[in-house]
Amino acid sequence: MASDTTMEKIISLCKRRGFIYQGSEIYGGLAGTWDFGPYGALLKENIKNLWWKMMVDYRDDMYRVDAAILMHPRVWEASGHVRGFSDPLVECKKCKRRFRADQVGERCPECEGAFGEVRQFNMMFKTQIGAAEDASSVSYLRPETAGGMFVNFKNVMDSLHPKLPFGLAQIGKAFRNEIAPRDFIFRSREFEQMEIEYFVHPRIWKEKFEEWRGAMHEFIKAVGIDSSKVSELEVPGAERAHYSQRTIDFEFEYPFGKKELYGLAYRTDFDLGAHSKHSGVDVAVQDEESGEKYMPHVIEPSFGVDRTILAILASCYREDEMGGETRTYLALPPVIAPVKAAVFPLLKNKPELVAKAREVYVALKIEIPQVMWDDNGNIGKRYRRQDEIGTPYTITIDFDTLGESGAEKKDTVTVRDRNTGVQERVHMNELSSKIAA
Image (cartoon, rainbow, N blue to C red):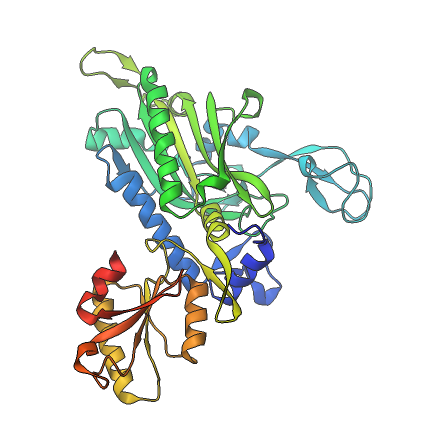
């Protein structure tokens, strides 16, 4: 991440190149909501696919689930969210603006007015289920994805009979009625989580905690986050969530300061124990060898998709001098780049070049779907556009490809590297292996 990378530059690029837009922008926007455009949606999907591969598909002790967003309200009573999922709120007596008490001083930052008393504000979005609007119809949009995995623990045990330790993994939306959403997509009211609940015997929790700690660092490197900007914070007891006996926050140096990126928590048997008590369903397991019956404990690696994207953008944003002008580009790892390669005809008004370029494009797209056709503007503008999208390679079909300057270059194309700008001739038959490497 360049030292002069600012949030203004990142936000401008995201809007300009179709990564992220303000939610409901044509109506003035809705605070704390963001829409992912064509390239943002592809970037997000590639990140999630890499997470699935590294955290689930490459292991034999992990299972996918996809639980409902709406759950029985007693789920959140058992987990403690109804009672304790809150932030301190203050309201300005003069302008009536509301703020989180731990993020402001003694006076209102808008009008210098005095604050009223601090009160707790529950961040869960409340909704109604069914036609009646009374206490029996109350439900909530889930504030985290973990709850769905805990309440399905027994279902998975009964249907798949996995041996402990094993984990459940889920990617999905979560919702929090933030008092003061801020810092672009860092803190918003609707966001996406990639979470794991890993069930273990209590005597091996430390060992498994360290294993997942290492796995999280591996993912950070693989996804393109600058590891030198990542640090670990051992969360003190007074600041840990009520369910946690140990928590490590993985913090990242965003342009607006060092903030939490991921979390790794040892939740003990709090969740399964609470749900067993409140539901009346025994979810304890029995060790096949010793016959011991016990309540599994849980290690929880938690990843925010939106915060991952922001950390990647901050890590991969680059500016340099090329061709006598300042160039902006995203040095995204190819595995997550929304476009893997773009195919150009050198000139779009030459039918023979366009036809050959389309042939190359169609053949490549069969093997690598995230290949783009681009003939808009001159070749320099196309390079700049693809650089800002983060496309690792651009492929130009020129007159040499057609063999007009000699047989030795026929069926070769010019491949340009995004990071260095270096160009090389590559035979058409070798393109897919070059791009996939």
